[in-house]
Length: 277
Image 1 (tube, rainbow, N blue to C red):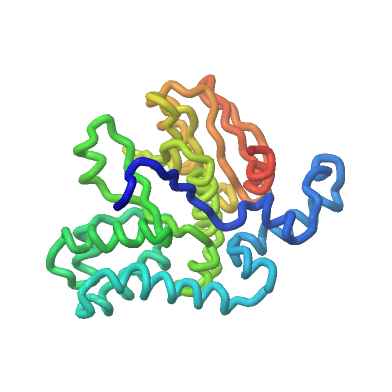
Image 2 (cartoon, rainbow, N blue to C red):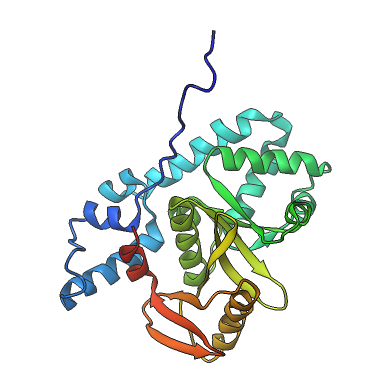
């Protein structure tokens, strides 16, 4: 009764930053020429990082829209697919992932935290989170698929609004929100996204075809305390994959760094979001 292979699935994401600006009636076409427009866009980007891009939330300004949507997805699309006895553990896992978005976690670690004895059950719950478009994972890049499967995954939430509304927060944690927003945009653009970690860590590797084509760090504020760590992680990735240029996305800093015949561009994330289609 069902004709398989005759349908096309289209993933619909929350508003991109450009769509967010359009909904706010801010014209981004002239930002390169107008300092006044740039000031409006910076302010809008700060709001975008905190509230996310769910259309009804953006248009109505009502925070409750996001919390209700989160509850609906969690109970209907995730908890509803498992034994009722797992409800408490699934809610705890979701809260943990919201609070630790942009961090690397393993299935065994999650099993220990939630006191779920079977690691395969944890994997099934994570799969349900992904299928319901609540969270998505990035693997640590390795040429061995087996090692990719075994290594910890970095967890990201599909919208920053879920993190700020439903997650447990004890600080603004703008760095984590910026990284999550970049991850969502990379997912929106398609392609394969990984992270790299050897001696140092690089937040994002983008793979197109059979090659790693770009390496990106997300850092809210590049300063003397973290500059060496961020650049070392990026340089390690550039050397490993034979790339000439790397990118560090910040809130509002802009400069160019030359190291060992490599170019590192430091750029405001909001400009990157508007420059790329």
